[in-house]
Length: 252
Ligand code: F6R
Image 1 (tube, rainbow, N blue to C red):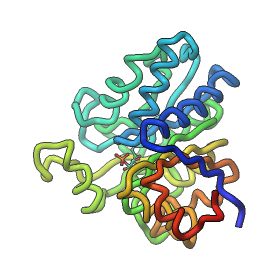
Image 2: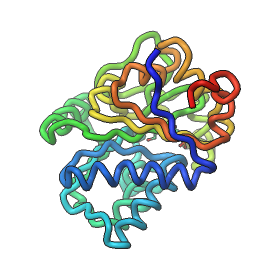
Image 3: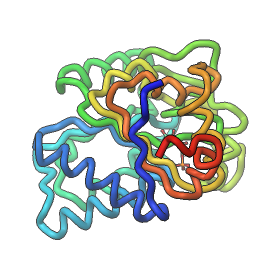
């Protein structure tokens, strides 16, 4: 098996710094690069580190483009739990990226299938994703691609599993308020990215990280497909690495 590029960090904040260095290098190399971005808790330290570089005058986002992985169906971009809102608040409003160069799937599109096709066309029109940032769900999901019988192909509308809705409940008042569906880039789309950066932090992710990187490649563990990507970098903190350190000390 090919050795995975696995970078260890003492904690989530350092993992964010390492991830930000990798994305910053990609932006410096190609100022108009297309970044695939993620929401959730994991990328927040990385986004803070990118903002710090920008504020220090080291990083210019003027020509950078971005496509986000996913969005809840039914939430408008100004809904505080929408992923568009999250991206604006956490990152876009704090750097000099142009709003028109940032795309997040439209959660309230009247024709959702057309919206998915348009998203794929946009990615192609922008020349494909140069660097895709990913987090991982505790069930191994990437984007909102949940465990399934086959790996999903392109951007599509998906039903969220009970476990994902339960995990995301913390951001809503009640479980009933958590949307039941989302639009997500497909796994096929994610795999077309030239480079992938998976960031994983926290002890609660240790088992699924080990399973994803060292287990069978199985659509029941969506992130396991990443083993097939030629330029995957994993940045994880010690808590998330604990199972890998036990079972695969040779990985380091
Ligand atoms: C978010 C996304 C999800 C998250 C995953 C982990 O855009 O695509 O797959 O990366 O649910 O979420 P956190 O980081 O909150 O543990």
